[in-house]
Image (cartoon, rainbow, N blue to C red; front, side):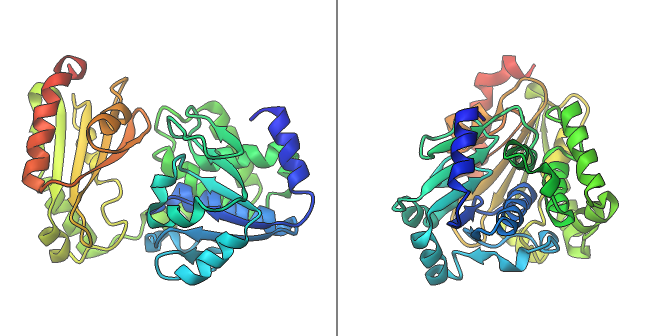
Length: 337
């Protein structure tokens, strides 16, 4: 973030403001962790801040300090709209296009507030007054840590903030094994532990929450796994009926796609999941090396993300989605080999 923007934001936040902080739809640990950490920071600075999330998120994120204060747009629409309409400043975290907040976008786009974007995904839209965008960063949580440091308030990071930030960095780096995990990331993590983040408790709170039905759903997903050896690719399908059979809960399929990518020689993995409420297929894509699933998702499946981790959607049936996926792969055979 450049010095001119940092100075302007410092000036902006010198006096109390009505501030709304927004994560993307279906927020994950990085989205919830970054918004809560920023919320704690702003509240401690005397700001009137509130988090408005487009919708709910998995139970394994609901231990985070301050989580009960989050307003959900889909179930608390009237209250959420009042906060957005009254906002002087709107922070958007862990997304870079208003399409990523679903129905909430129509309300947010009408706001005349000062927008501040903090995000690490590729190809940011130009809606924010101040943009902190860096695709090389491990996570938005690491960027929020940097943002607080830019404002010269690193010493003000509390144990609650440290725990929230640690959570998002841990999950978005795949427990520190993904390529975006740098030596600087580890230094940030060390600082957060020094400031009160309990690494083992956070890991247990997020990862050691399996139910019997979730593990059975994983077994179903692995049974459905198909290996396309000619393309060094794996895909997994989960139908609506299978989700209902194993009592699916939001977040239960988190990380399933990585099992395919763990196979020796596999460069590209995908999972296709039927949405229970709406007639579309949700897609998660992962890759190794320089094969860009961001480009693949943006070009073919109305999605995007990072080079090695992206998402998309298909409005076709499961059968037609898989058929289309296989047909598209033929154009990428050389890249995948």
